Image (cartoon, rainbow, N blue to C red):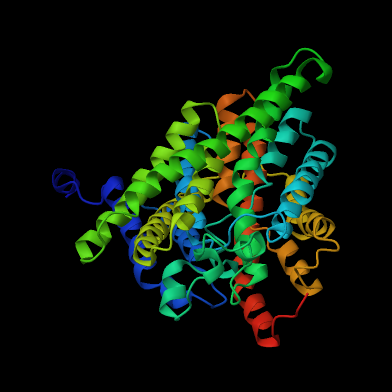
Length: 448
């Protein structure tokens, strides 16, 4: 009988892996729409599927990022850039100092405070080296644009389906600056803040990742390398990210928004071109030494605001959103499998405590400090925006990237602490996101 089973090659691990992936994609297509606005979120389902599949005695080798770090870097990298293009395409408000004020505050004040708080706790409580603590702070700083769909703005296809049209002030090239930067009347300030923050802070965690790598290898004190870090990793790379996003995004808009979108086939072709555009913006910017994450988000904004072409925006955003959901499903299954395979085994109680404090104290306090006195958000909305600093795919990317580029001696503890924090965020924010936003909407949006 055993020889017969071996001959037939039944129950091969690879075949089981295909079954698990197929179940995840089927769940994305059939289950995810039914869970919108409900307490249970689809990322939790994908995570649970991965855990059960790899914990069961099926002979599946857990996808351990500690052993396959390069794969972890590239899988999460693709997931982040695709999600950033989708976020850029869905934001209908032009960047401006005044109308994006809450976003700038979260980026300039709350994010550095979060990094500093995590790094201090990592060094003082968990016992990490200073460089490893800064890397953990940089990894846990960005909020996730994929897992936060319940608290984000809607895409262009949703606006059209509900009969909402863009603000005429944004269509006119002759209106004054105030009109051009005024948000649509139906735009939710809280949702916009969370969406735009997630789109930008995935890029702005990079300077601090490079700071950790510099601290790891530097033989001299900060005075010797701080100027170079500020000039290259902060100023130059951010500038090239902005320039790359504007230039390549503008060039892509010239092409993409001229494609025919009459038939279903043409709409699909335009949608597929969103992937090509994402890769082009990211690749060109990275070749020039800029931050590709920042460029992709800005490129998405450029395409969205180049001109008022509804159907092209719909096709581009729908395809980007579907692709990001597919990648997210794969990452969540892999994370669940890695946890089943012992990714959290090196976790200490100090590391677990850090994760809890990050979710319930560090981010909320840093968010409230950053938004203090912000009159575009009501006090209740400032509290919600501070709490929903959802950790996810970007956190896994930055940690994997840092560990790939630098020889950090506490890599296993870093992975366990980061994975636990992401897991806790997925559970806490996934279970509370829809309910909190529904409660807020029922009570009515409180004017600032």
